Amino acid sequence: MDNTTQRIDAAAADRSDPLRGFRERFHLPEGVIYLDGNSLGALPESVRQRVLNTIDKEWGVDLIRSWNTADWVHLPQRVGACIARIIGAEEGAVVAADSTSINLFKVLSAALDLNPGRSKIVSERENFPTDLYIAEGVAKQIGKGHRLVLSDSPEDIPGLLDEDVAVLMLTHVNYRTGYRYDMAALTRAAHDKGILVIWDLAHSAGAMPVDLSGAEADFAIGCGYKYLNGGPGAPAFLYVNPRHHGGFRQPLSGWFGHRAPFDFDSAYTPSNKIEQYLCGTPPVLAMVAMDEAMAIWDDVDMAALRAKSIALCDLFIQEIDSFAERLGLRLVTPREPELRGSQVSYSCENGYAIMQALIARGVIGDFRAPDIIRFGFTPLYLSFAEVEKAAAILKDILETSAWDAPEFHVRGAVT
Image: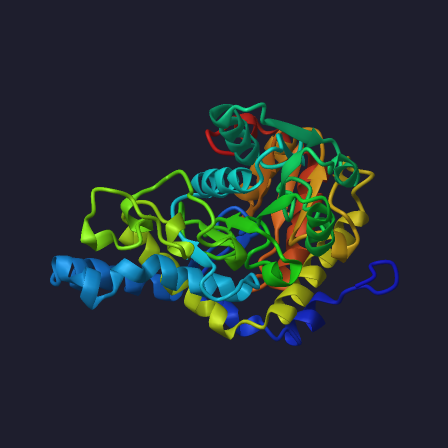
């Protein structure tokens, strides 16, 4: 949608919204405009009863039998199959397991092993810190001269792809700015140089259509607690292109990655399927919550989801444009829909205090150091009227300097 030629009428957009019926499937507190689903998704209404049933019936009554009778043992594959459908992955190429950081350790180690004789891991300086920390750790652990090379801007990345690069490791949508990479084009450019590619989908899975198979990506990781609404600390997921199955050994060779875990062999024989990327026993309660949350996606039209995401972001930018320059806000998210995810970020002085003032007024976004206020737009449960109202509240807070109250300057442990 072109912001310069067409203004969005919030009331009309809500009336014609094909996704408006999904809101009732989430528990949303009264009086809250939730613009932080890119950090923690809202609670799906059906998850509570599903988890209670697991606690009371499956664990409480059936006890250990539920590994079979409730099929707990296959939760990683079942949840992975649901995620695969919305990230464009091949059948049997995704499992839910562990955390994003641990899964990155697994796939990065495997990718480096698959591309011997090359020493560089290329990423961007603005990548989410855990990805860079894991890459630094893997490079030091492997040794052999491996090193992390960082670009200072997205435009620099193609120029860094030389014959010594083993892996290109990028987050599809940047967590601070919302900038979105062209997955297919960059994967193709990397492959032309013999480079394997890992995509972090933390800010795109569940926010927009993703086509890992079409892009011929090698590996992908992502978390379950943002747009997928799996709950705080929900299991993460990982994707391995089927062409790489069985061609290597990932380093965390736990028993659930064994070809026959219940044979209890003393020697490790890895599975030659995606199960090789499992490690220890899955956390059943968290997996059950994630499994139930994923059921919503069976009914979601991903094209409609993306269209609404674009329109919500456009409306927010449109509303804030009227006062941004005067009140000290600088848009750092691309205006062009094809270059952004489902968030809008602004840099400003006193960003932390401004965000705390917004939260006190019922508009929940978040702050990213040093100066970014960030707003995530979750199409399944957010209305256009709420977006318009949130912008008006932000304007009032800035015009009245309400953010300068002492309590809004007190830093919490989580920002």
